[in-house]
Image 1 (tube, rainbow, N blue to C red):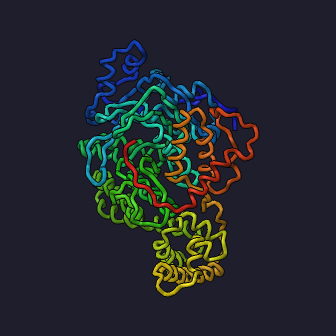
Image 2 (cartoon, rainbow, N blue to C red):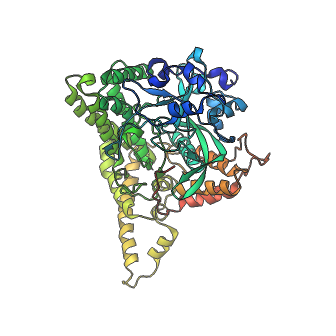
Length: 567
């Protein structure tokens, strides 16, 4: 790899604004430039950039500018991403990724913009939505310094847009931390996701959320393609086939696909693959609306996300029921079916109904195959097994048992299965095992209940060991995490940071190290963050107090919390 570069050396025009249409009220970057800076007309700026309005027919984005804040303070960077993007972390990067400095280059076609889209939210069409608090800045080279695989850098929480619908365009610090950690742990777990680069604290900015006033921040993140299924719904709703065609053509070029049918099938397959890994690892996004579903299969937009604690198919982080663990695979297909209907005969041709029916078969076939392979790996079995036999004999009976074992953590179970040889260590807590071995006078209903579960687990375990003895084994260390940041752990970090006014970020750094290395503790003491305020030259043993505390919290199978969508 070549030497590291500054952000100004890698910035280039976004192909999105190069090939697609801006809202006509700010048709050129030169006009946007007139609204930038202290001398700009504040009334015009408010009217043109931030006052909610419907985007004109045939348009795909609105030029925009981050709102000026009183103070900016870099809080945390992902060193891993800085290295993979070959970027130098300096004051230029700090200023640009906070929204403090705006890159406007009319001659090069570089300017910030917010994207228009619509969407179905919790099953109901909501009309125009769009980037209400997100601003896309520019494209940069992809990971590894690859100029061909460009990614678009985006700021979340940097202010309003014409799509804000009356909201304040702000992002609380806690929400930034939650989304930052979620992006990076999902990537480490092998789930296709947008990535988070840094968090900037806004010390003088507050947001009202419910009855509380919270501190704010800006989150920088990136993806190679920010288009959502809801983008296409906007043009069907507007009866704008020309606008939809231009966006489809941009997607074809961006993904190197040949026609609209191939794009639709690609979207179906990629989302099925993403959902297979998500389901196998027990992740719940919480909100999987059409405007939160990527056309290329990225997992994205992490508000009320969580991971399963115990195996509970009915659990939904928002308590709506629609996006429960058992429903979320079907809901993503529901979104893809909406997408297919939006494309319709105009773009999928006369065989439109046949393509939708075929796509449904493809989605569930790809999902099941990839899901079963992942679950087989989690249990130490080779992937060249008869997957249906594995499903019937091993997996489905196991999930039936885990459904009743409320005190056993879902992800921790698979790690323990491959580490321990005794049934009591895999299926039961120490207290339960003691109860099982205690004298029973015949009146202890709980003991009898445990005995029934023990008998079921013992029968399954014998079948599993027999099945395992007949098949090649897979390495499980890169599929079964020893740690996943739970809601309670992330809340603990947020509280620690709040109490010290974000002056000591070693707790966040420690969580980042653990979350981005979920399969091994080898790198959990690799202190690295440039904004760490406590000197620690001896990295060995870095924040072992938190490591011990959070491992204990992760291994305790406490009920998962319901969460709010507000951030």
